[in-house]
Length: 472
Ligand code: FES
Ligand SMILES: [Fe+2]
Image 1: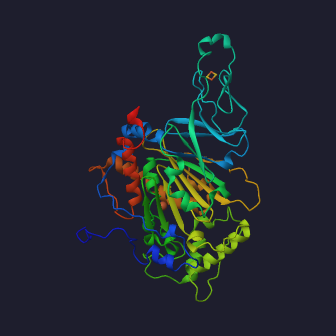
Image 2: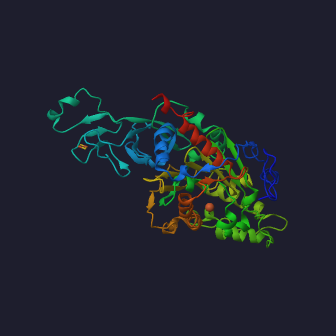
Image 3: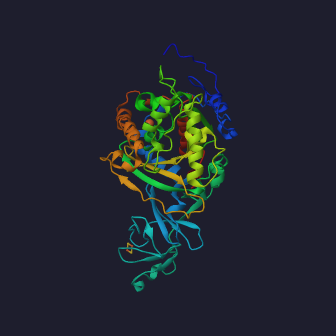
């Protein structure tokens, strides 16, 4: 490693080949500041202890000191279109009913019967009252206690508050969040500056058209962090290189909670020595880009012929602006190439990853499993609801178990193959971390800055600098 420059300059897009900001200058349309404003802070280069990924004690600390105090993305509005519609949301040892109320508001109640503890519901559905399947203690859909059979046997409960305990709920852009412990920053403060960035992309006009989750044999942070940098493309997803600027990507962080990886598509990776021209970039893009899957687009709108003198990126951008204007009824003609093509992959601490831009958007979330060695990765595709159409109901979630493959959800199209390539690494990362002799994980200063920020914030909760566990 002697040839690595020990004193790189920080604070600018580092890349091999054209940088993200230089590429934005070539965009067909004026690019909004949110895509070009630099936000990088060097956060040190200390190794991350591998125990954070493997130790049951550390998982317990996360459960006690972090999860109750953070805003958790729990559901989308279109999962609860009608009063009484509810989602069972489970994470980090808790179970909630997220329920649409008559006045359109949303409440989140702990999904545990206050008699002998049965979960009130185990699947999503619609209900006016929640009657426990064990002995029929019953609650109204706002969580207030309704009645119990054989009340003569429970005089000791007569004066007790038997309403279901609730969690805080806040909503933004079609996303419903909950926080177990009340108090702390409002959702909008917590998300800053994400709402400003997503103003143009208006996810409140979108709906979940595809939803697949899978149990994965690795820690939730191992899996999430594999989706926080683009530079593993070079060996993990080599088929993407003809149309992916993997090492042209920009990485940005803001405060404790928000970061992004901006990876351009429609340009060739600097790792490809010799390309075969602009049309080849488009052709490879059509073959291997997950978001052009015809499962949620009946035609393949990206099948364009690159006009003489244009780049693949411009030709794809032109076509997408036109197609999205026609198919959604919203004017997309001023959208930038970046907004209709690229991977604008945001993360919100701790486990929520919505893609920005106007394309059908991927939305990731990751959840700890029962042990530190497993987790659940949840993937949705949001698509814009045609202008004037009512909001459709969300596609139901398909759940894949540990022994199933992503490809058993063929509706994911080519994305499933890309995820399977990631899965070829992740169980072995977990096994390697368990087996590690020096018990250290190293991070790149720039391309892995999102992981560094995430780990820093996590430790602020564990150490009591954030969250309220110390005051309890
Ligand atoms: S456990 Fe729910 S009514 Fe008995
Ligand atoms: Fe990957």
